[in-house]
Image 1 (cartoon, rainbow, N blue to C red):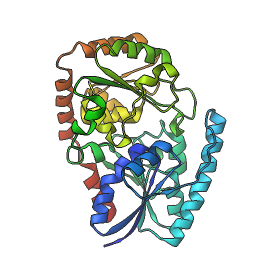
Image 2 (image 1 turned 60 degrees about the vertical axis):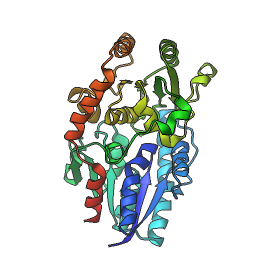
Image 3 (image 1 turned 135 degrees about the vertical axis):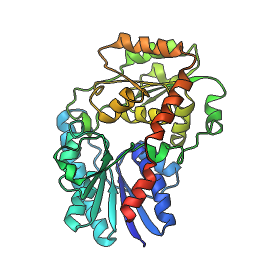
Length: 353
């Protein structure tokens, strides 16, 4: 069997989600087309990886308030829907899959099957779910995730999206790939996100602030290199900590780091897949099924609310004083992996059946 398959992406992690699937599909005779939003890091990653893609010419509307997030999101969606419709009419794909609302809309309109991927619970990412799920043919989500009243469309699996690229069958870390950036010694990574995505539309979420960052860098820099990765422009005082490695070696960087501290959901889950000691601090703590399972069942992460900064720094000290920390997290990772599937093979079998 052969034909065209469209894959639409919203986030760098979503490229990783589908990159191995794309290889399997192409080797089986399918033609795969990537569609991406106008997101700088995602496009950099695609270019670095040598991937061909089509980029939606969405608005550069600054989404810094709730109203602007809504208006900008709706404008972007209209542009994406129209653009994807034209592409589908010219090059009718067999199926469409991805993390973008437009594939659900245009799939419904053109009668092309759409597979929408999400591992956020309905109540955590309401805006995406309300716009995508009514129109999607299928919702591909981990078994533990709640998709609200659309469970009849859900195809569940025993795993996590990020195992599609961080499962040992799919990822082999290499210190050699990052040696020129980190040398041989210890290093720490701190990640700050903007918290302005669709699931942050309520504008009442927060995580690490610059005072926290200052305190963390002062604490960690005597013990090794400190790298800071931020979606926001950092104040000048932090410039010399900025992580400047190529975007396609970030998972090698994460795997060999001594500790990862972040307010990012996505990269925290990646740390869990890799068995990297990590601490997450934001107001989503306790609300996301995937992270709750990773924390409570597998003990692969620790979530702390921003109101409890003493607990954050206490936990950092506890990690620093634990000589068996890395081995303990790797053992927990192996337990988790023994109970989860190779997600890429699952998706390939699903969409080519």
